[in-house]
Image 1: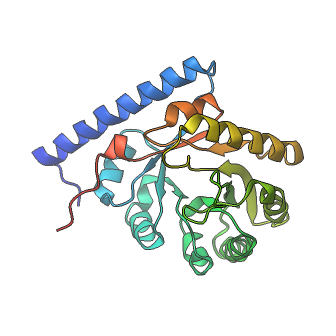
Image 2: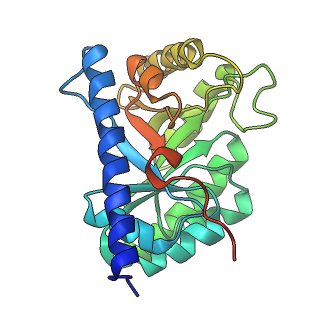
Image 3: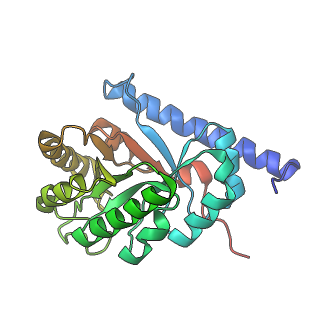
Length: 245
């Protein structure tokens, strides 16, 4: 049930102010990058936050939300089905979770290995037969670190072409583009410049795969400068993770 009392109104006001501040940053960064008429899609990452916050965000005009744990995402998507939201899965994904994710997700931003492509394709095909859903939008997660994604996921840049061919060959999947997380402890600009180069190589072979999912609360300006089409913003809109209990 939606909280319509004073606390609920106060939270809505807080979210509205935070959202407006982030939108101002996005607009300013786009102007600085010379892309005023080409603003990126804002995905609000709502992990750990309650469904009622997402309902408030939907009322404030948010259409895209991101989650990184299947169990939490599935429950929220079911609870908020009437809100008409597009759900983006943005965390590392086990192949055994593919079937569940396909029941609610419009996009998966963390496709980084052939086994996951195959699992998603199989689950998406089954879901299409059952519900007629649209093809799953797939972003290839690219590791911009030297450990080839050992800690934060992601395929090596040299493997992007192979994964792209595998996604493109699956009729139940749509190759959207690339995704990356900037390495910890390093300036984000050079990393996102590398991602832009990987994206350009992908687009040369797959002209429709122009999406670049990059940029979070702390580095959205650098991501926009280097062509991000989708931003994944959490804490600057929702605040810190709520206390448990």
